Figure 1 (cartoon, rainbow, N blue to C red):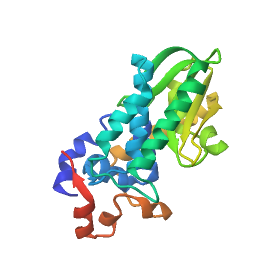
Figure 2 (cartoon, helix red, strand yellow; figure 1 turned 135 degrees about the horizontal axis):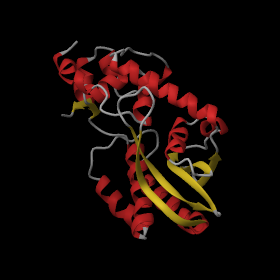
Figure 3 (cartoon, rainbow, N blue to C red; figure 1 turned 30 degrees about the vertical axis):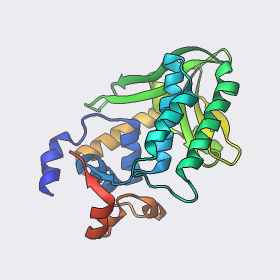
Figure 4 (cartoon, rainbow, N blue to C red; figure 1 turned 90 degrees about the vertical axis):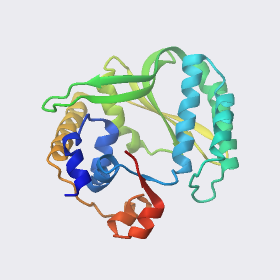
Length: 261
């Protein structure tokens, strides 16, 4: 074990969250490199920054009743000067145009269907049986939609979500535990196609699904605290930020990654 890892061992799991569970299940070694060693890409993904900016613009709409399009334009202008990694045919100007189009579409077509907003970027904390740290999270939106109480998470994607993406979403399951009074859980997907569109995928969770997720959370918490970190190779390695470290490519790792405190 490295000195850095030994130093942070006591902080292996300050809390649990959907994101921590998801990253550990994707690859335990990726969890270690991200959370314990503190490695981050030198140039963050433009798609990640785009999604974060859309989230911030929507929160501005719900909390301040502000113009999300204007918020996005101002924020995106600052991104142009940042060291950001674009993939495929994506460009700063192209994503900027898409973001404005998606937000206008949301304001014109989706926002009128929402009634009382009960929470935007609503944080929560849960106690999970047999897990001695809190489970925390932030729900993008809790509101009435077409008269029904829903909780929703906003996503940006280059393609439509499949039915199983929603039915099996651990994120929606976790959020359903936090807001049990919600009649439905939803993923609201901002699709970055040539003709931008917004898709709502609604779902409900039952008792067995909630129980299964709680057991999964308990398992992951136990594995992390036991320091069971190992590489899980697969096709996903090709787009993993930490591949240079796993391959022992020190030169490439130094170029592509930085370590935060």
